[in-house]
Length: 374
Image (cartoon, rainbow, N blue to C red; front, side):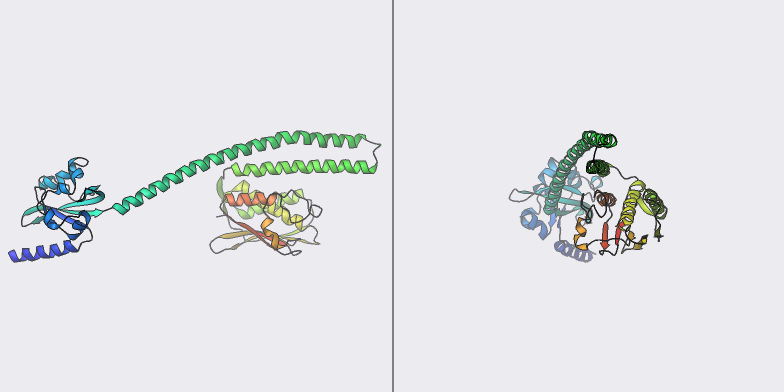
């Protein structure tokens, strides 16, 4: 029986010596009875210097001051010990320096009775990483606060700008167009050139009014929250097409509605997208003998891609990067009227939904605008 116990203790010591963590044992008086090489490496003591010494030599603060409950686990009666309790505390090396450790405690029965087995892990690197992560989070939080403040300031400036555009610019504009129209009606003695110039003033005033309306709508989009609902894209596309053709006259247009799966997004915003894309398709194909519009979708790699296609004037793909810029136009106003804000509005809405928008075209061979709604 004694030989069996001796062999068992030898095997146990071999396991302890090979353990990657520091392992030590104490008796019921808190005296160290066993250490492995990792303990020697951690603390700088030799085995002879530690055996028989109180465990406080390694964990003075933990056992006396900061964590007095640890003393119960090492030196009180076995029935009162906290078995397997994980602790996060500091240990002291032979040279007096300290390092963070994590200790797990359990009790075992040996020839000397019940002893405490302590597993000690040096967590210096973990603490270092935790501090770095904490600092990074604090820096990130600070940057978020600063960025939020910048956005709030920018929104206030934008609101002030919108108010100025809406009120300060509209008053003189109304005066210009109003008095020009009145002068045109009452100036019988004006020659044809004078009437032509007044009409130009009126038309440009009206155009500027449209531009102000579009700018205000564009700026409001950035502040508007998305109200997400399920959207019947086929029904919405038909409704948008009906609205656009009602405004643009009754000219016959060949339109095809393909497969349009439901989407999830802001109903009113997505309708603005479709109205703008359909309006563009009709505008840029109006010089064709037969206008052909297709509104449909196709399957992407992991998403549904909706598109509006026309057989109109198209554009040079070399300048496609200018399509969605504010006031950017690829055709002159003499060819096709517009303020250059419609596609910028469309892009802003799609990006607000987390989607993508792009176009493919060939001059005089139509254009196709694609967009996704995640």
